[in-house]
Image (cartoon, rainbow, N blue to C red; front, side, top):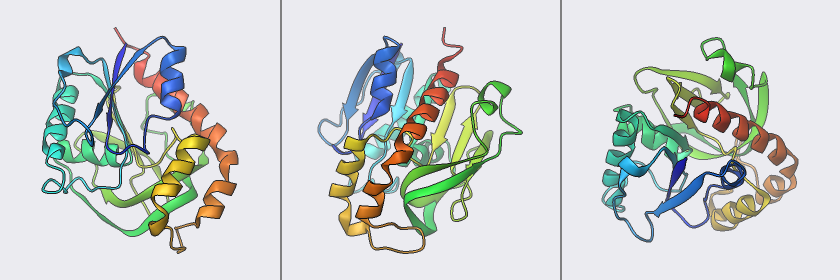
Length: 232
């Protein structure tokens, strides 16, 4: 497969998704919007992965390429490409499909649990998810579900943590892809946001809880295997 990654900042890359792609002999290419905001040829892409970033989906005046990116995401979805969005990426998918994206009641930054609801999911995906899992969050916005989407994860402060549309479009508000290196980079670049609150952990706590990374990566691989299981 040709997997194309939309990256918005240098410190939020694909993390363990790169390992998965390499292990499956997939080709990985990038549009780094913060460096070269040039529209890619989406007809050459089999799967699109849209990463996170500190900006809002509404920051089109500050980042004019966001409008182009949403058009690319919509084009990929309409062409039945595999599309995975993570954090900002999930919000961009929702926005591209016409759903509202807005500030959540609280920021959620750190290692907090999500609870899965699998009853409406395809059995092949439902069996891969535990009842609950502690995952890494870094988001202040949330979204309404796009048309046709099934929500399959929630937390006390964020009702829509993950969604699936059909068998080919998935959005995750949290960071299954995180690695020790990418976690450190996110903390380093976002320290000003780490003001402890009910759902915001300090930098030391975030780094100390790296034991959850392995389980997060395993689930990420399972979700990627599901999304790509009927490729071709």
